[in-house]
Length: 257
Image (tube, rainbow, N blue to C red; front, side):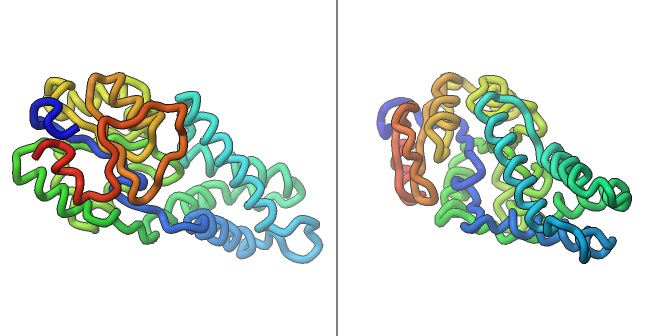
């Protein structure tokens, strides 16, 4: 992409595997299941005599909720962390119908489900802080376009603030606030409007996913850079970026800066 157009007026970034990485191994899933299980056990649910162990029920319900999120993400139908927590509670109430305490615990269960993202360790992708600082110093406006999973946007923003990089961003567009997932044009339009409506041809989106990041950016008239340092998307049926980089050391040259 270097040399194939004017220097960018604005650059937007995906969040997961572009700004931050979730530790492997279902780290947040495990935290959520343990926290919800403790609430149930403390209330006497899942004690001796219950056929299905609480954790088994929670794990199955969590997997069902994640499948619902994934289906919604593919179809651009919102399924938030609040929806997930409530669907898990629905499954618990069906399974433990003889335990009246379960229904009374819904609010507490939803709260501990949501809270687990706050204390998680979400490391930055290597080199992203330096790249953001370099772009900001050059007067490039910066934004975020993020498809939110089970961890809501306020918590995701808090992680960026804790890492000291939130200050670089002029605007952000999270699916749980905008109401659309990438590659929907609405979330890209929201991002560009928040950045002052620059010419899309002078804007670049950086992300790891070909269908959502590259496809969405291209449809919005933006250029796209796919970064592979945290995740290398194997979807060969989706469009490829104008540039593909393996680390943030390559970003500024790819932008012609």
